[in-house]
Amino acid sequence: MYWLELLIMTLYTGALLFIFAYSISQLSLVYHYKKAVKKGQIKQPATVGPDYEYPMVTVQLPVYNELYVVERLIDAVARFDWPKERLEIQVLDDSDDETVELIARKVSHWQQQGVAIEHVRRPERKGFKAGALQYGMARAKGEFIAIFDADFVPQPDFLKGSVPHFNQSKDIGVVQTRWGHINEKYSLLTRLQAFGLNTHFRVEQNGRFQGGHFLNFNGTAGVWRKTCIEDAGGWKADTLTEDLDLSYRAQLKGWKIFYTPEIVAPAELPAAMGAIKSQQYRWTKGAAETSRKLLPQVLKAQLPWGTKFHAAFHLLNSAVFICIVITALLSVPVLFIRNLSDGWGMLLNISMIFLMGYVFLVIFYWNGFKNDGVSFWQNLRQFVPQMFMLLSVFLGLSVHNAVAVFEGLIGKKSPFIRTPKFNIKTTKDSWHGNKYFSRKVNPLTLVEGLLSLYFSAGLALAFYFNDFALLPFHILLSLGFLLVFYYSVQHTRHA
Image (cartoon, rainbow, N blue to C red; front, top):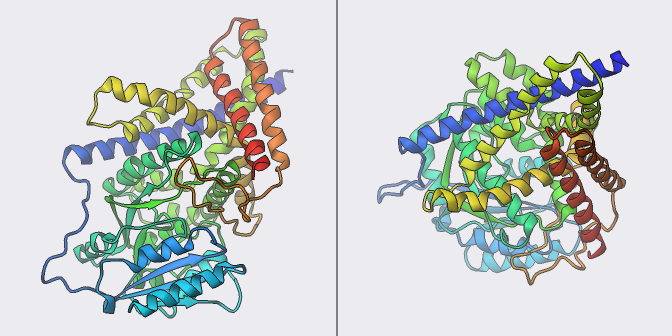
């Protein structure tokens, strides 16, 4: 029994230690962000003077079976406020359904309006999105390349607000902008996603940029210098996050990523749990694959210690889900150890200190959420319920994401799983009948339902032992797994 308890406490404390260290790194980004805000250093959209020499820009739209959203994307990009003779648009179409005909008609329409837009079809869909981008780049005329995923609807002034920033330095390889949300108010799930993404773009990306640390191109709504892509080795399909991979390869070569959060590119948030899971799977597994590929190079590079520290946790951030699963599953046995065993007092006290990591994450999200235009108490009233629900769903997705991370770390390959788009903007819209929506319930969903019951047992044990130290954690876990289970089943039934 002693050795089993030792194993449980070691794994539990070790996982909490990693979460704690990760939270410290996020807290450091809050410091850099707040310091930049205080000094007025947050970057604004560029201004275009009368003598500005417009460079040639290629806009790439990688598309695969986007029947519901591709037309609005093409329309938005075709209306860019940029000289027509200095702009070309590539619709990189790998579709094998009716999307092909829709694109052909839309491209023909804009060609007749004098827009230099091309419908690009590859001989074979090799390398997924990365392969499409690389194929298009070989024929791109632009000095700069802007990229938009199918769910985005950029504003006409996007290029004018972003491209001129490259004139500040020849070392700038990327200008990244902030994502907006077309359907933020559609449901609880879209509000929570917007909450999390807003913090990423407001605090995390700003913090990395202002602190001089590595950050990443977010895969869309950004502009690359073509020579930067070429110098870094081009787009590669050996990870599911080709954007993170190329970002780090470019920065290891000495290129800089310029972040300007005041340019906002609106996009559609996944509204169904199945779509959220497919997106999370790709993001978390891809991050793990990229860390496996590039973390050794980062640690060996001639970089400041702080940059290495942040880069390591940036690349390993998806590993947090493995640690969450470990601490969650072992938290119930820890209750028994706390109340039925002797000799673990010091280690248990240390582990409780490391639980502060979750408190640091709350501080991180608070700084991404608060609105300086309203009072502290108004902010707090809105923040507390949203933060509670965000943490619940975040924990509820941990098993699904941990599986993806584990696959990425051991090198198990899987195809690029696209996130289905629904063209959902208001509560009147629905994904019922959407041909891209999977109508199969993943067996892992059953595990999520059972885990909700498991952590409910942890709640009961808290009252049985009169030990409430882990009660908030178990409330979040039981509710989070219940919500993920419920939405997974409910959204599939109504597809």
